[in-house]
Amino acid sequence: MTDTRFADLLERVMGLSAASIGPGAIERAVDARRRETGLRDGDAYWGLLQASSAEVQQLVEAVVVPETWFFRNPQAFRAMERDVLGPRLRADPQRCARLLSLPCSTGEEAYTMAMALMESGIEPHRFSIEAVDISQHAIDTARAGCYGRNSFRGHELAFRDRYFDAAPHGWTLREEVRAPVRFSQGNIFAPGFMAQAGGFDVIFCRNMLIYFDIPRQKQAIAVLRRLLAPDGTLFVGHSEAGLMRAEGFVSAGMAMSFAFRRAPEVEPVCAPIAATVATPTRASLRPAATKRPVPLHVIEKVRAPRPELTRSQSTHRPAETLDLAALRRMADDGRVEEAERGAQAHIRANGASPDALLLLGLISDAAGQGKAAAHYYRKVLYLDPGNVEALGHLALLLRREGDHAGARLIDERMRRQDGRRN
Image (cartoon, rainbow, N blue to C red; front, top):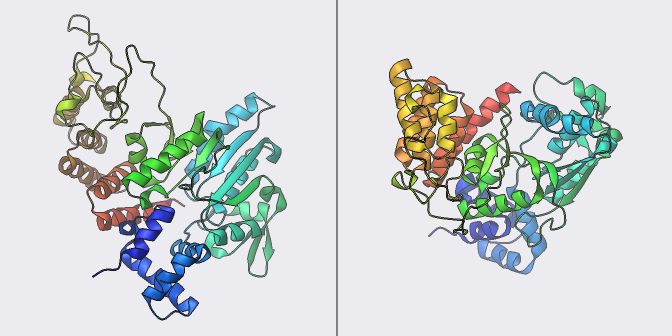
């Protein structure tokens, strides 16, 4: 019989879904800590975990294996400076920006945020960066600011000469970059986590949510929503983009940056209705006289009701005459079946394309038709193997359906894409 005690403990403490990393990884971490503590078997080590919160933290440290480097996915950092903070700070000389890196791992991401802003001419006193991670060891490494070769990847390494000094075992970050970054140890699932620290202009939370089960994902996203300023921007990992749309965030429209913002608040025009419903079927997405259809990017949220236009009042062009961008907006507005007909008509007229197939996949996904959605996402990847949006949605779909091994393969494929871009 499989011993699930340790996996269950890690799920309670840090939200880790054993299926996301494989039970073997947890078994290896437990065995390493058992041998390190000199205990004879798993039962003895389990007893130690029950008596020592410090050892629980050591087990967490053994499971958390950071994989990060400076300027990983550089498009996100360029978008942060060029499209988000740069214009705001230049327009208001008195404004100071607040940023958050969560989880910050060994500090490469948080320090990259600082360097990206400094590279654009923004002085360090104009911004502050909070960097939080569950691993105290990672925090200690980040504070030391000393990095080896593995933290510098790709060919664009001129920043290393500008912001680092050579050291016997690597490179040491200069104080001007370290000054605006403050590190702390913390657990996003802890009661009162960063309770007084909301209003961040930018949050980087990349490749954390994929390791949680669905309830924990929702819990973590609720915390991120609370921490993000109303006009703030949240950057996530490739495979988390579909999850953010499903949880009511909207794309910030910055190519390859995986940036999201809160969905605009909609004032109700009648008495409020329940905020959460079961995942809709295709029939429930059909326009009705008393309920606004569920938008594609808010799969489980109900918006305020609105009256339907009669055919004579409607000013909508037929879906079959619209381009794919307009069809996607139509789907986001809740006119899902029209958008589907339009996408099918587009394919009949122009042949299959990644964008048209992706739209059909999103529509099927929103309607709870997982098999059809996976079929369309895989067709997209046949035509465009590097399509990160299809990869991300497929990985999320596989996790929802319990295929964590398949999802990990997609994650690895996206990591290889990420490495090639860097």
